[in-house]
Amino acid sequence: MKRLTCFVVALLCLNHVILAADDPKPATGAAPAAQGRGGRGTSNSNDVFYTLGPDSQPRPGVPKGKFTEAKVIPSSAFPGTQHTYWVYVPAQYDPAQPTAVMVFNDGQAMKVEPGDVQAQNVLDNLIFRGEIPVMLGVFINPGRRPDQPEPNPRDWGDRTSNRADEYNPPTDKYARVIVEELMPALKKEFNISPDPDLHGIMGSSSGGCAAFAVAWFRPNDFRKVITFVGSFTSIRGEYIYPELVAESEKKPIRIFMQDGRNDNRRPGNPNGDWFYQNVRLMNALTKKGYEVNYAWGIGNHGQKQGGAIFPEMMRWLWRDQPVSTDPNDAVERSFRHPPKPPSDAPAKETKN
Image 1 (cartoon, rainbow, N blue to C red):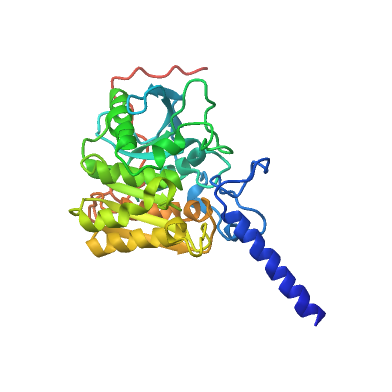
Image 2: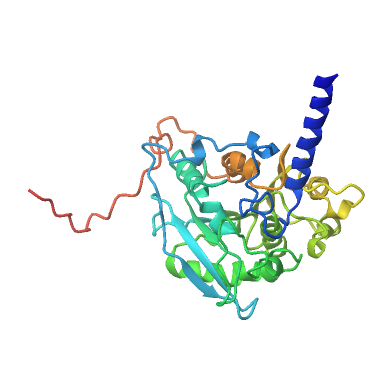
């Protein structure tokens, strides 16, 4: 009997931990390594079952790209604010070749090492093996006023930046930031393909909603989407997308969605239930005939599962790159190495 009682108490304690981890807004004074939008999870969280694999880590022999310095662009879509972004330039980038692009909302959290995603390592590994096309990774932070702090991996900026106003409303305003402000700035420095099928965007939580909104409202500019634990709920009316999908003409969008069965469940409040609303949107997209893939795990509201499967999400999202079946095509059958410098480039000096 004592053993049974201890077991029941342990179960209740575990359930309490999981429910607490589902709360997207950590309590005032809570530790910054919270279970909310930052999604780090706790030692008792379901998220501990998801870990990064080899393709999310630096690997020997794989050419590494480089981040540009942080750049800042002013916003006309949200007057008085500005956006900081970094560009990850893969070793294989050739300025003479039009290049694909993948945008990462909440960029600071998607690139931090150690972190839940470490997206730049995924780009290095998959580009090297020819599993995705050569692409630029653009890591953009939520907008902020000059007097507000920059969002960081421990504080994504819901209360200290323009994140909530940009990412949550189901409108085209954030799409304007990406299409009309970010992309022109990128095109001044890089040779970016004009093909919208070579433009992708991803995000987590509210950032996932923002990623979907960019493709939904501007499908002639962005057509590939990844969402982790998307907040398609009663936050600023995000739960309306399934109805919009059903009522609207089908758009040329491809999307991979991820969520966990313990993501902010709200019994009796379906519009506020994260997992329910993700499944509802997936069903609406599927019924309409969209290219949809999805993964429902056991996790809470965070990036652990999404980060763990991110390499596979990228393979599926970008699977339609050109491929040669010629057995004598040595280029097709080899790893992707950095382009050789032009023959007229000055030779490097050697020391005796």
